[in-house]
Image (cartoon, rainbow, N blue to C red; front, side):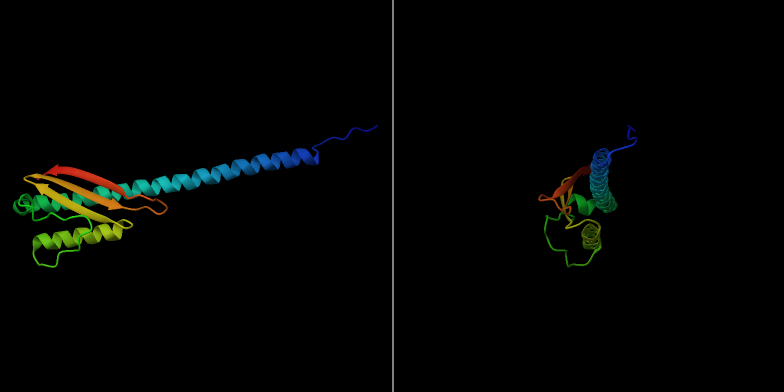
Amino acid sequence: MKREKGFSLIEVLVTLLITSVGLLGLAVLQAKSLQFNHGAYLRSQANILAYDIADRMRLNKDDARAGQYNITMGASKPSASGLVTTDQNQWLTLIETSLPAGDGSVSCVSNVCTLTIQWREAGRDADDSFTYKTQI
């Protein structure tokens, strides 16, 4: 009698199944990695945008300390002309174009300002937000 050598069909199918599960796991891991990297990118954008309006207010300290830069979340863009409204309009436009469903607010009391930026990532039920407090 001759003995058969090599793999049987069942061994090949089990190996194929294990390999397929491993590759599927790698694909899920890659998708999650891309999702987390995009979230980190959006948070970095919010940080940059908060610094942007803070720098604009530092250049115009008197108006910032007087509360002229205050904006509530969800408010429409100001329509008046002047440096403050130009800064506000440009900042809100940057938020809208840089972050999905982005919005921002500024609240200054004396020389302490709280800057809040909100956005909503795709597939999430709740808004993400970034809050930055600074002295002007």
